[in-house]
Amino acid sequence: MQVSTELIVELQAKQERVRNMCILAHVDHGKTTLSDHLIGSNGLIHPRLMGELRYLDSLEDEQVRGITMKASSISLLYVPGAATNQQGPAGVTDADKRENGYLFNLIDSPGHVDFCSEVSTAARLSDGALVVVDAVEGVCIQTHAVLRQAWEEKVKPCLFINKMDRLITELRLTPAEAYTRLSSIVMHCNMIMSAFHSEQYMSEADAVLAHEDAKEAAAAAAGGEGQDREEEAQQAEQEEEDAFSPARCDVAFGSAHDGWAFRLDQFAAMYAQKLGCKPESLTNALWGDWTISPKEKRVVRIKSKGAGSSKAK
Image (cartoon, rainbow, N blue to C red; front, side):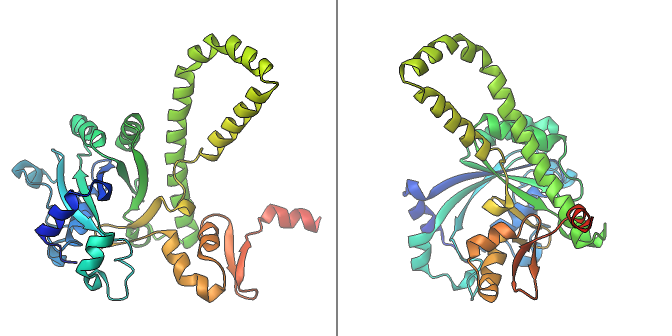
């Protein structure tokens, strides 16, 4: 998809179409390689050089050492649905770019622990964060640090599990083993974000205790309405417990080096018509203990071995 400078300047005047996005990850988890492919989608890098050029590593030391040392940014055009278009991104017309396009200010941040200040700056300038995790190495120390940085700056994070090809070419995992590994990575990230929530609740404990008497008096005067509101708030907190969920489409899987990635809703859109179900329902069923029954031609829950043995008894 070719993007002109005039179009970028035109979108900069539309604040509702501008998004600031930073890429956060542990060192060598594939941030700059992913950035190369995102930049290449706008026609700024030749396809053969994607992942090898390290476009945003503009310093000589960065190219020599092979790591990002300074945060770098670039403006890119994103058109929803361009990747799944039948003619590809090249089939997007100029009218679609102007009407539906978004201007993404992409910030590539360092992953080494010595450059945490650059990560802090990138997070404070961003509306959202793309957290990259290596599918083989999993969650590392700096991954924990960047998640905390996103939490402190109130940046909405999305998870991208990178280097999926290594699960096949190096570890040679079966599909069930690969799913178990990916599920553990998502669960680990959710546990980290849940710990941040707990820390916030503990820090506010003194304030809650100080106003406890006032709340009880207000609840008694309102005839129990205060208690109902507290129960509703607790239910809302439980519903928002998981920060990342593939079924919500805030988790993507792919290989930045090979230039491919997917979300569950994209597979659901392909198979929904064949299975005769709604894409939204199929998206929820593609993650978890579900499988497709060839005889019934529908999605069914996987029966655990323990349940089968108990029924036999």
